[in-house]
Amino acid sequence: MTRFTNSSVLVTGAGSGLGRAIALAFAAEGARVVAAGRTAASLDETVRLVRAAGGTAEAVTADVTDSAQLAALVRETVALFGTLDVAVNDVLRGTVPAGDIAEEDWDAVLRTNVTGVFLAMKHEIAHMRENGGGAIVNISSHLGAHSRIPNAAAYITSKAAVSALTRAAALDHIRDGVRINAVSPGASAAPMSLRAGETEADRAERVKDENPLGRVAEAEEVAAAVLYLASSAAGSVVGHDLVVDSGSSA
Image (cartoon, rainbow, N blue to C red; front, side):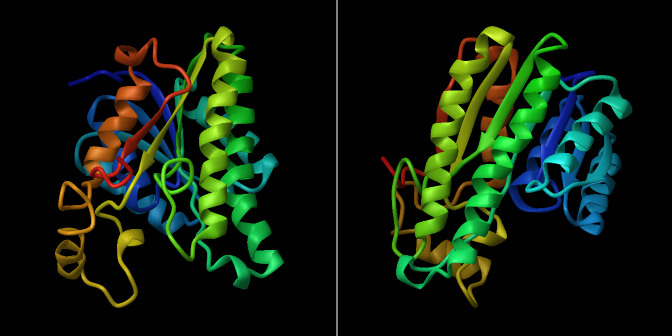
């Protein structure tokens, strides 16, 4: 499939986990990918993997909590590939039980997970609406708007906000030609879903009884949902929050 041939795609959080899987999936379908994040070494590995598979990618470091860096990231994407057609905002910071969260940790989680998405969209939208439109997919979580667990209050709050922000922004900017949606993954085959000291085999055994499907989602399955929402096949899908969680929040 070549749904994104000659498209320019920006993926934040592309140095590992779901972000890397999303970058690889877009590149496999012909996109020219900018892999963005804070750590140069992990981004370089993502780029290496893309190129080894015959794709096109460049790495650009940026901190999603810094508006100036995100503005520069959009400018660099356009300088590299001529335009910005699709942006995927994958940012993540975890948390601890509500009563134990230090105020600075609460602020840091919301600054990264919510404000980081807002700032990224702000600069992505500014370019897209002046250059023929585009598609944005924010990575939220099934934890938040869809379900809750203990000991993750700040994370849950932040991801519920991402889901709401996505829908509000979608209404604000669809007439500008910018189509905005979200994907809300559950536990997936990524390091975040491993508990302390747990192996992948341990996780597989645990989730047999924890969700209806009996397994975590593969990173490629989450990426497939992102690519669908970014594609022309989803041209009338606006402000949707697509849950990919093996039935956990059903």
